[in-house]
Amino acid sequence: MQRHQASATPLLRFENIPLDLSDLRLVVRQTADVLRRYGALEEGDYRKIQSLGRDMQLIEVTGQWFRNGLAKQVASVGMPASNFADLDGAEVIDQVLTVSMRPFLSRCAEVLQQRAELSLWTHSHCALCGGQPDLSVITPSAERHLICGRCELRWKWETLACPYCRNSEKAKITSFATSDGQYRVYACDVCRRYLKAYDGRRASRPVMPIVDAVATLPLDAAAIQRGYAS
Image 1 (tube, rainbow, N blue to C red):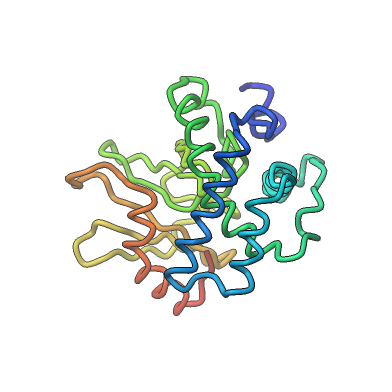
Image 2 (image 1 turned 90 degrees about the vertical axis):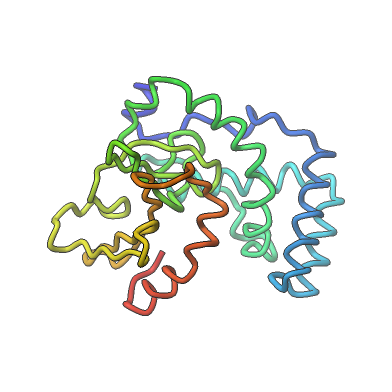
């Protein structure tokens, strides 16, 4: 962990993820079914994903997707990019694989989450898979933890600092909350990006990233209306 912290490179290699091709193919097709049912996939994109879900090259494409995400987050340390972005329908494939791979990646995250060495990590991208934070949580002790959007790993972060540009000037951080105070938005006036937070200080349950991401969609709309981007 000390070595990876120094180089800002995540720990997990794609080859180390316990993947079974049959399981992955099934999950990809089922994910496409659900997204289509709720109008999140066009018919042409749906057929493309169904075809990919039956293709023996699915593992290779998934590996390209995983490494592409790593490269975008840690480009500053010279990690080579994959050719995932050149694939036909890369944006749709990214959407489906982000959901499909979460169960596999979260199992890996559960292992690292228990390790004390995780406290050494001080970067804004995920220590395990290199993903960006999709949500944060304010703990009962008033600490802020970032939550990876790919594997749901959580790690400690500064209370006010923007995870995208590291601006920590209080006057340039805009914060607003829901009427019950359960959810908050921290928006940076320097890079114009925002991150939502679940306030666990008075909550009756722990944070549930997938549920809370949906429950806070009105906050996304409010932040976007104010000119911020996720």
